[in-house]
Length: 192
Image 1 (spheres, one colour):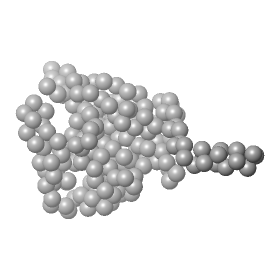
Image 2 (spheres, one colour; image 1 turned 180 degrees about the vertical axis):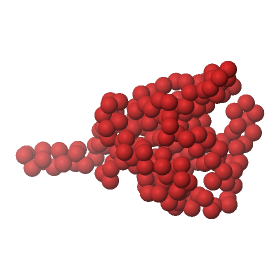
Image 3 (cartoon, one colour; image 1 turned 90 degrees about the vertical axis):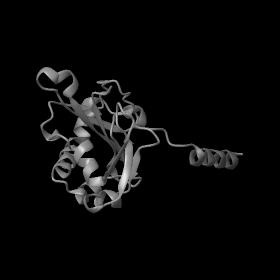
Image 4 (cartoon, helix red, strand yellow; image 1 turned 120 degrees about the vertical axis):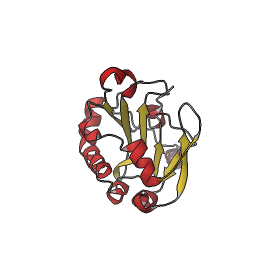
């Protein structure tokens, strides 16, 4: 009987999916990821896609031109990230807010326009695992990676257009057996 019970418990442990880790509190998340965020931002600022690829998880990097992540977003493999600057292939990255026209660009141009459109190393505000709804687009980054770390780098708007000229870059990391990996980059801007 004991053997049967032990066998049943062993099967239960093997078959039962692991419980997701609870999200880290903001201070804990900052402590865990702050150094890696600095390295990712430096790689983006220098257009060093080889270095950026070294932070990407094995399942690739999801990129979204807006804050909402869904199944239509482009997922780049590590190799695609590494060769982004020289890749001439034009992809459809999503749709332009307002017109709905397709966003078509090569990887390098996409990153210039939708990822590194400001020097986020000088962000006015940096949030670690603190969901913030800033604009009209639904921010589902924390739902997308409930066990991850979402870092928002926010640039306030300037002058009379401050209410519509703000922007945020969000870096989403996942903790795994190999440590932290970058799994998604989204951007948040004022939308219609």
